[in-house]
Image 1: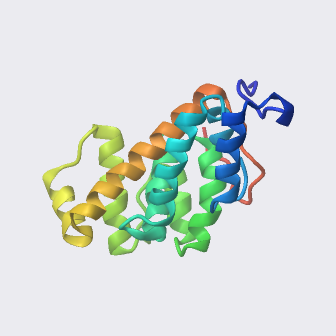
Image 2: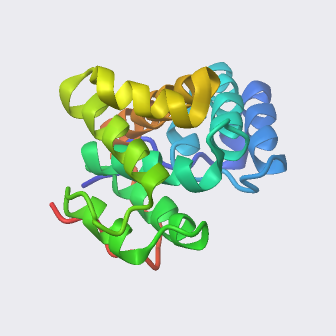
Length: 184
C-alpha cells in the first residue's frame, strides 16, 4: 500500500500550510501526525478539523475515557489502523480495560465494560452499523450524559469517521504502536 499523501518537505509548504501545521504542533497533539499529514493539502480544512478534534478529544462533555471507547469503535468500524495504533494505547492509559480494547478489535461487546462504557459502546455500534440509534439506547445515553453529552458523542463518531475516510483514501500508514494492529 502506497502512502498517497505522505509528508511534505518544509520547503514545499505554502504560508497557509506552515501556519496550519504550526497550530497543530503547538496544540495538545504536539506533532503533525496521522490525518493531519494528508489534510495539510487543504490548510483551511485542516485548521477547522483540528479545532473540532481538539474539543472532541480533550474537552468533550463525556470525558476522555469514554471518548476513547467511541474512537476505538469508530476505528474498528472503518478498519482504520492509524486511529487504532494511536488510540488503543491511550484508551488503556485512560482506564479502559485491556479485555474491552481486545473485544472492540474483535468486533465484540466485552462483559468487562463498565455501565457508562457499555452505553457508549452500544450507541456507537448502533450509529455506525444501523446509521441510527434506537430509542432505548438514546434514552440511556441521554440519562447518563445529557443533551450536550449525546451531541458530543455523535460528534466524536462523525469526526473520527471523517478522519478514517481521509486516512483510508490517502492510505496513511500506521505509526509504530504498542497496540497490535486491527485484525483484517
